[in-house]
Image (cartoon, rainbow, N blue to C red; front, side, top):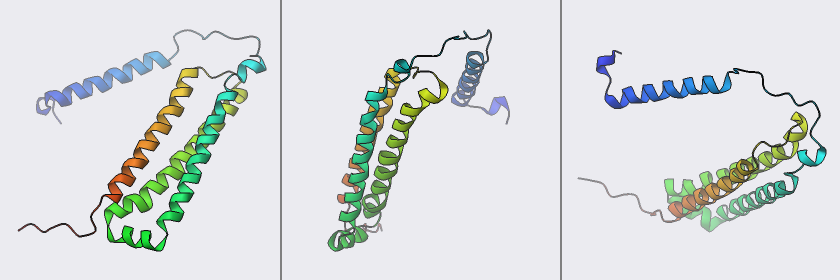
Length: 167
């Protein structure tokens, strides 16, 4: 590939990527020694986020229960027959939405909550950003809820007849 064959957008994309790589190198490659902490953090500072991790486990449990109820409802004979007739729309409701609510909602929220609970004790430092931990929870829950509702909405609005053929 020659430079004269690049479009302006491709060139700007390459320049932007190169700038990000350079900025990351200058940011993460140490220029001076980091400050050394001589005394360990107190236990109350390490566990400052512990009370806020309960919502991860409650929300993770909620999404696991929701996924279990979804699995029961989608396997009822009349629902399973309807979803099988709808084709790809049924696949959205039957497979994708259930899988994502169980894995992302249950698994990811539970494992993230466990990390926020255990990680400060393993590394001996408190969480570096309380706000980031809060945003991670709320963005995950909101995103999963919107994703789940959109898959269910798109799947249940699917037609049961095949699309019309063009002539």
